[in-house]
Image (cartoon, rainbow, N blue to C red):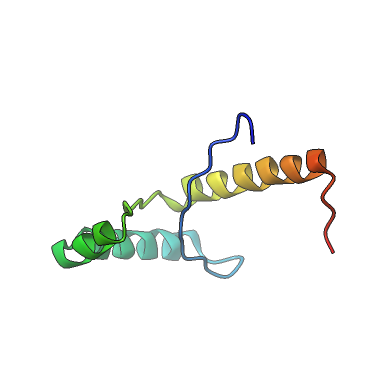
Length: 81
């Protein structure tokens, strides 16, 4: 699609209303695990790079992608079924 740059990503999501301090702690813990040499090697073997954005930054990214792809779908005339 002209003007669209898409990268695949994977993430973990918690329930709505999760306490912000818990979300930050989980993010910190997962980032630490992803930085361990064995884990990092396995991630790289898959051709991936670990991210580890803070929960608020990742939430913003998700909102932006939802808006982007909703616009693409609307422009293409795609309706939910």
